Image 1 (spheres, rainbow, N blue to C red):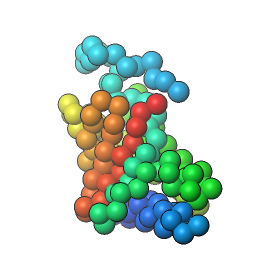
Image 2 (image 1 turned 90 degrees about the horizontal axis):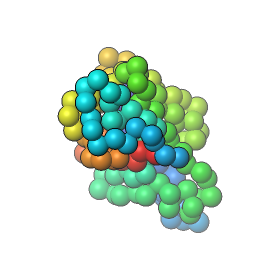
Image 3 (image 1 turned 90 degrees about the vertical axis):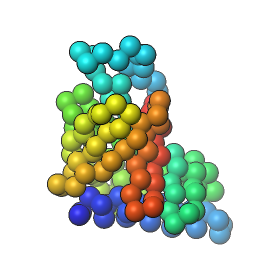
Image 4 (image 1 turned 45 degrees about the horizontal axis):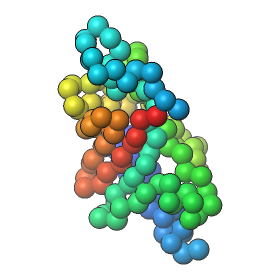
Length: 139
């Protein structure tokens, strides 16, 4: 439940940044051959690029530019099956960490006993929960 609250907090913080703004590398594992013996193709660093909260779509780069506050939220999926999501640029000073599993074009991130489903489409990883979504792009 705490993980779900962290993700929702992240979305709400980005929504607030957007409302304030309205007022005022490469990855070497980009191999098309995706055998089970190799590192999973989703391993790498992703950066939050889009947020949808209550039907409001936000482009993180535009929010950063308009607000003058650099918003960087990296999601790092490691080869050992662990992940970290750093939300410190949102002023929360928090990170979420846990494990992940890939299943074809889907992944499950698990933190504090909660599963967060994700969809993978090329270099895009999307998480959707309770009608809200986060979109990350791979470096």
